[in-house]
Amino acid sequence: MIEFREKYINPFTDYGFKRLFVEEPNKDLLLDFLNELLKEEQGKITELTYLKSENLSITEFNRKAIFDLYCTNERGEKFIVELQKTKQKFFKDRTVYYSTFPIRDQAITGSEWDFELKKVYTIAILDFIFDEDKNDPDKFRYDVKLSDIVTRKVFYDKLTFIYLEMPKFKKSIDELETRFDKWLFVIKNLHKLDRIPDKLKETIFLKLFETAEIAKFNPLEYQNYEDSLKYYRDLKNSFDTAREEGREKGIEEERRNIAKGMIAKGFEVSIIEDLTGLTNQEIEAIKNK
Image 1 (spheres, rainbow, N blue to C red):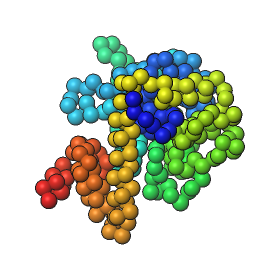
Image 2: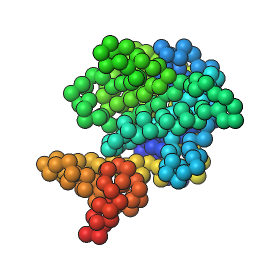
Image 3: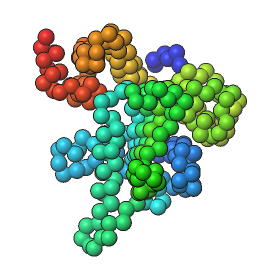
Image 4: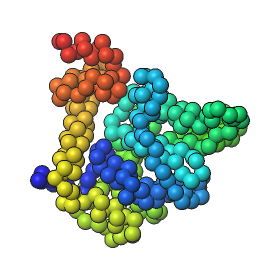
């Protein structure tokens, strides 16, 4: 078995996130998190059903829409949860694009349909800060709806985007005031903890810590987590290194440095495209050099 320095998994790895929130036996963890996130809007969600996270569109282009987590509640409202590890060009565009799939899928075929839609929520848990938000260090949650520019009143309340900039959440365990605070603390710090803090000894968090304990993994789970963790660390290292080297050279040069680092580590071209905004031709040119 693989030896880990950490006692608990990192929720920002693909495997860690899916183990905690996307597996049927742990649906109560997701339910509790969404209830805390959306309680002012939703009241209380009592039931969730996982949906296929890959969009089965008839076009090859639209098959690229793969969500980290996709589910619906007892009222037929849809929830997309995306975990984003590193800064990505046009990420906001991506979340808007993703929201169109649960909207379109509500169309009723073969009968008259009056266009009534159920609510759609797109939730992005971010391990970075948008450049335009850097001067607002205390605001880590952004709730976005279609609103009138002049009156600031919500024009349409069935489409909601929530962005959580996790690096801005800096509360210590002693500063946690609400259950939502506790969730954010756990998501950000789980892999840094070596025990369950007294303040988190509630039933839902005790289950989360038990689920996240690496020592309880079987050999296959160990290997899957190790692979996911390696990908996460390589990705972060590529960006951190390129960011330092490119600080004086401008944004375009920084993007190219990031691509070089990712090429050297064997990342697929499609992933490099997504994360740098460079075209396939630009990436191939860098590879050929």
